[in-house]
Image 1 (cartoon, rainbow, N blue to C red):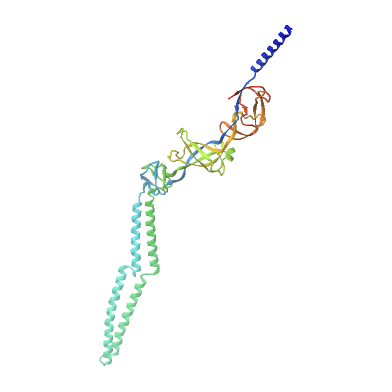
Image 2 (image 1 turned 180 degrees about the vertical axis):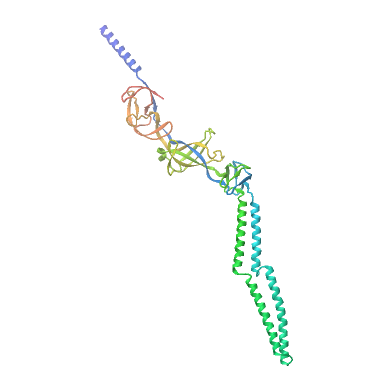
Length: 403
């Protein structure tokens, strides 16, 4: 009887030892609990800062930069003087045009008055002289007419006096016709054309003079000023660039497969490596109209409007962009590393009764850098296996370590 009891105790001890050793040999596997939280789906990429509105200011005519009363980074108002050029011969060109206009104006006035002064004066003098002679000849003829009636003079003498009057009338008429012929419609038209040409030359000279002063076309910040005092600029060369820097526009480069996640109005966050800890916010303004090559990438250029009240973001800056494409409240989430794609999208879930892992197919939703939303196939509080050195399969017993 004692032997039987001893054998039973020995078997029990061996069984307990076997169970202890078996449990001690189980692989330790880390697990994480499925929890509910707000998850944000963020698209991370890069971009470049541009002025929201800008104008490149260029010279219309060549000249030497004589004065730059502004500096880069300065706020300017519309119409403010940016640069003054010196253009050789501008003043002389204007003076010559004004002299030609004055001469043409005087000529036109003379023609409208009847002709050139010297010729008109000569004709008028001759007309006045002949008119005086005519008056005397008329008085003589009238006197002879009375004498003929009194038989004190002959009719021949009367005829001679009348002929003298007719001759004087003919001469006066000829002079008046000559005076009228001095100025024709074509003469006035020609003088008027010469005056208009001279006035156009004045306007052109003044335009050239105005091109020597360069003014701001819009109000904003003079964020670029390549011109330098003493430099010679040819027509079309830039003086500077004026733009609006609050807000700014950021051209964000989104890889082609991610473009479907972007929509106007989505929040955008901008950071700049040169100012760590600083960030700027705004919204997506416009989706791209085409996909272009950017190095080895195929990207769409998404335009974003970003507030820049301190003007710290300057045009040309390369920045980091984060577009918040989706926000899910109270989402059931697990670490992204728990999702496996060996045979479909799934996870290993711990069966707490047997401490074994079971494979489950799941559907995922929104995700951020660390966690992913599970929309089906999992319940809140379930423990999911995290990556480890053990190759798991459904039904394996494990020693769970909850993290």
